[in-house]
Length: 399
Image 1 (cartoon, rainbow, N blue to C red):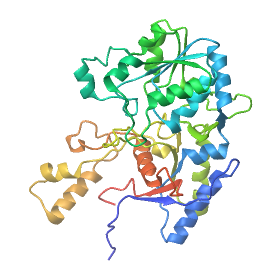
Image 2 (tube, one colour):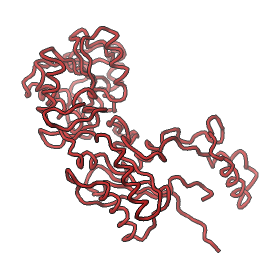
Image 3 (spheres, helix red, strand yellow):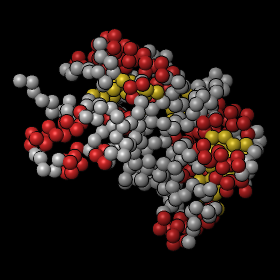
Image 4 (cartoon, rainbow, N blue to C red):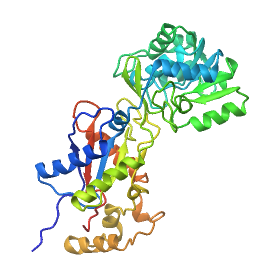
């Protein structure tokens, strides 16, 4: 008698060699997964997902740029104009190194910070203090003096950094003048300068549109900086500086360049070696929020910059507890199992949008869901597992 499977989705971190520029990443990833299966005693299956962090992809591509490269690009696009640098996130890893380059390429910066927090949830203030001061965050523009009067020194919980002071000192250290204001309406910067670098990530298209409609002379986003090579540097044609990370005190690692060929190569290598048709993706930040620090994790422009076609779309699932509590509330045991299994098999691939039995299932892109699982599995520290194998993700109760 065939035994029933008792395990659903499994996520495994796969240890790999340290990746360097020029390495054959497709071969390393495919070989590492196949060797892990042999050593650990599990089998690869069709529709398994092999995911690799964007970091090793960019590293293998050699996709790096320097502070001087950024400064050169800033000068070419803004000249000697005062630059309004608006809506940056508060991050030493993500933005501070970019700000060094921006400031080095500018004479004066008006730094406009959103409040009470940045786009990804790093806090500069509290709503309680905003309410007590009678401030309207949707319309009020605060000077640095007013901000300090109301909020004092606000240090991020997990880093202990006062980013207002930190960014101000950094800009001056790079030789530029700085003025700091706090506002949430993009147009507020136009009272100070009509040359604007908007640094928001997921709202950047709207911010650019509002600034241009309001008469700004120069409008760029971070995606417009380092979108072409400067003096032989790396670049990202689609995302520019978005998704970059600090590499050294003078260097950033950019988000990977076009890498669809890479995921297809890994897929083909695994098929050739094992006969299994796996899906492959590159992932960056997961898309989730930390309830303690209130930080929204997604500082990358997308969760996945490249993936095989089998990962296009969203889940099409039924809610088992809804079926058990409603449609089949009078059944139990084997009868309940059979009824639910029949409902799942009857889905036939058609959309469940609007079906009450699908309410509460997660309406997100597969790549966002799987990428978030992979990001949590690999972590961001010293686990040494930049590749993740996800098995059984497309299984359901009937498999």
